[in-house]
Length: 382
Ligand code: FAD
Image (cartoon, rainbow, N blue to C red):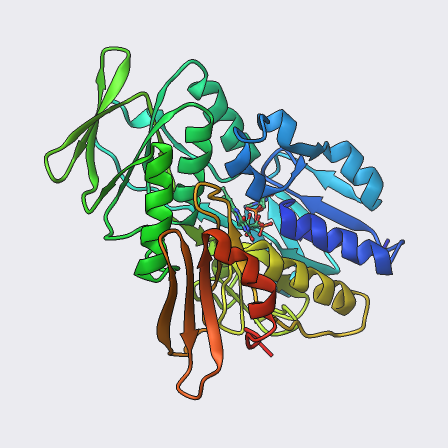
C-alpha cells in the first residue's frame, strides 16, 4: 500500500494545506494527526468571542469527522507525535511507527510561559487554541475582573474584546508602549488612547511578580509596588514556533523550522508551513502567509515544484476601539517615518531613502486608505 502524505497539525495551516492538496489530488492517502481535538476553527476569531457572542463551541466551524469526510482523509485527534525518523520516512506516536510518503509539519507556535510565584498561579490562562478558549470561558463565567499580561497585538485584541464582554481589564506589560515590535510610537499612542477610552487600564513598565489568592479573587503584585485586584489572568506574553520535534530529528531550525521557498526542510520529503516555519529567514505568525504557503506546497506535493511568493502582508488588528491596520517594513529594510493626521486618525508611513513606501500603520478613519497604500508596497519576498 502507498504510504500517505502525513500532515501534523490541524490548525489553519494543516487544514488549508489539506484542502489545497485535495483540489489537485483526490486519491493519494492523506493522514492528519493532531494533539488537539481536531475541530476546525479560525484562530483569529478567539479574540472576538465576546463581541460576536460566541463561546468555543460557537467558534467551531466543523467537527473532525466532517473534516475527514470533506478532505477524504484520516484524522487522528488527541494524538501527539513524539519523534520523526527521516532516514526511514516514519514518525513515532509513542511506540507506534507510522510510515509517510511526504511529511508536513504544521505544528504552530506555543505560548511563552512566564514563571509566576504565589498560590494564584493556576488562575493564569494562555489562550492559543479552541481548547484553551473553552477553559478560559468556563473559568471567566460569573467573574468580572481580568488582568492581561502582555500589550502586544494579541493582548490588545483580548483587552478590547473582554471589555466589550463586560470585564474590567487591566493590562500589565514591561514595555513603554503597546505593540512595541509592530508599531511606531504615534500609532501605539492612538491605539492605547482608544482602548483607555473604552475602559481598559494600562500599567506599562512593571512585570507581575506574585499572584496571591485573596478572598474570592486574586491580588496581583507588580514590580513597581502596585497591587491590582482581579479574578483571573490571561497570559499573552508571546508565541514561540514549535521547533523541538524538528530539531530532535536533526532538521535545521532557527527561530522556526528552516525551509526554502518550496517549504522544504533540510531533509527531502519533510516540509513545514504556518507559525512553525521560517521561510527563507522569515517567520510570520499570521494567516495570509500560511495561505500562500498552502497553495504553493500543494503544488509541490503533487509533483509540480512551486516556490512561495509573499506580497505585502498587511494585518488588520481587531481593536475596534481604535481600528488599526499595520504593514511592517520588509525585514532588513530601514526607513524613515512620517506621521500624518491627528488624534486617533493617523497615517504613519515608512519610506526608504529613495522614496519607496516600505510599510505603514493606519489608525482610526485612516484605515480606509489601506488598499491604495497596499498597491505601493514592495513584496515581503519577491
Ligand atoms: P496552530 O493553529 O497553532 O496549529 C498547530 C497544530 O499543531 C495544532 O493542531 C496542534 O494540536 C498541532 N500539534 C502541535 N504539536 C503537535 C505534536 N507534537 N503532535 C501532534 N500535533 C501537534 N493572524 C492574522 O493573520 N490575523 C489575525 O487577526 C490574527 N489574530 C489572532 C488572534 C489570536 C488570539 C491568536 C492566538 C492568533 C492570531 N493570529 C492572527 C495568528 C494566526 O491565528 C496564526 O498565525 C495561525 O492560526 C497559525 O496556524 P497554524 O496552523 O500554523 O498553527
